[in-house]
Length: 154
Image (cartoon, rainbow, N blue to C red):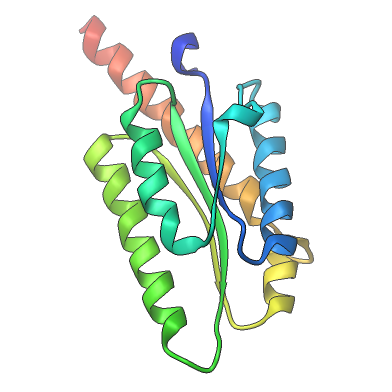
């Protein structure tokens, strides 16, 4: 289990497509509570859209406060290539942050074709990807904490 000092989770959530992202946030918070970790209102950072997720996640990751950062958003395909740019750059940025900081970054960014697909993945028929992203980040943080404990002990 994570060290008590870092038993906090940061959540960065997009305000764009809020009917979806609010449900992703609820799912992520549920996962954090299920693991008996802390994520207070001051650990949740709302950003305008998915493109801003990596920058704020990077700042959160650079603080020594969090065991993981969970990023939530929804990019819905439209009639222009905007979808590919936003989804691709946000994804690349989040992966880069995880590797650079050695900190789990929960990937709760939906990249879907329709609003219905987004709703299905934000608490609908396909579950809640916010919950899944938080649970995955927490699981990775546990493994990292174990590795660091074993390394320090041996």
